[in-house]
Image (cartoon, rainbow, N blue to C red):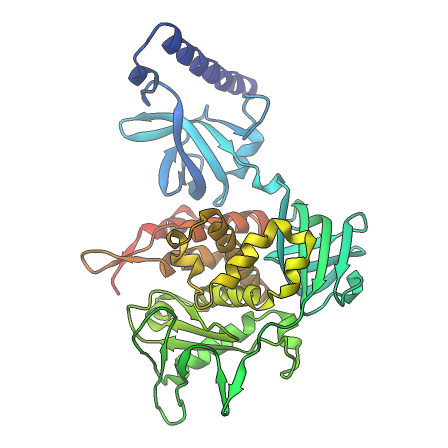
Length: 451
C-alpha cells in the first residue's frame, strides 16, 4: 500500500511538469495552467500552528485538509517519492510548504514539504548562563540552547578564560553545530571570550541613575511612583500595589539565570533586576531602562496573563533582552570568531530603551533580517529561562500572542499568531519535545476577549 501511495505522489509531480510543459509548447492560457482547482500550486508556507490529525493541520493559521494520498518530503530532497516517516514531524512548530489544490474554498494538500530545521547547521552567540557536565563532555546553557562541546570540537579562548574549566559568569560563547535527537546542540566549534562589565548604574546624590526619568513607589506609605518610559512623552503611574509588585519580583527573580544570581551584590557583572507594573493603555509593551535591570510592564498586560507560567513567559522577554544587551563589550569588535554575529551585536547596542523588540519593532528597522534574528534569539533565550526556572515553556506561544493582541473596532481584543509565537512553537518542537496540546488549545489565537 505504501509503495502505491508513493507512486501516486510521484505521478502528481510528473503530471504537474507535463501541464507546465503543455502550457509553454501549445500556448495554453496561463490562467488554466495555474488554476488552483486543476493544478497543484503552493497553497501556503510557514509554521504549523495547530494539528487535527489525521484530518488536517493549520499553517500560519490557515487550515489545510490532508488526504490519504498526501505525500511528504524534505525540502531539496533528490527523490520526489513520499517519505511516510515524515508524517510524525507534523507537529506545531514545523516549518512546511504545502502544495495542493483549492476546491470549494477548501485547501487540500497533495504534498507537504518540510524545511529540516532539526537537521541544519546553526550558529549563535550569547552569555553562558550555567555550566554542567554530561558523559565527559562540557555542557553550557547559552543563547537559549543546551550546547555540548565534545573533545572533537574546535575551541578557542580569549580574555581571562583559558580553558573549558574556566568558563563562568561573564563568559560569552560563539558556537557552530547541529541538533542531536534530544534537542541538544552538539558543537563542532566553540569560541569563548571573557568580557569586562558594561557601563554600571551610577549613583548620583544617593539615587541610582538608570538613564530614564523614574521615581519609585513607596509601598509602605502607599504612595505611587511614576516613570516616563522610552519614547513616550507623558508620565505614567507606577501603582503602589504591594501584592502585584511582590508577584512580579517573585517570578522575575526566579527567572534570572544561576550565574547572575550567584554573583555578589558588589560584583560589577551583577545585573540588579527590578520589576514594576505601570498604569496606562498607551504603553503597549514592556520597557527596559538604558542601564541596569530596570523593567516596566503595562499592568493591563500583566492582568491578561492567566497564570504564573504565562507571566513568567512575559517577564522572560525583557530579562533575555537585558542579559544580551548588558554583556556586549568593546572586546567583541576585535573578536574574529563572531564576524557572522556582528550585525546582531550592533543591533542590541543601538536599542537603548526598548525591550519591545519581540513585539512591535519589526517594521521600524532598516534591516528586517537583523531584527528577525534578534527577535528569535530573545524568544529562545526567554523560553530557556522559563524552562530552567521550572515554569511550563509550552505556555509561551499563547503568551506571546496575547502580548501582541490588537483591539478591534467593537472594543474586544484579538490575539493571532505572530513571528514570536510561531518561532516559539518551532523551538519547543525541536528542543523540548513534541507538543502535547490539542488542536483546541493551539487555536486560541483566534479568540476574542473583552478587556
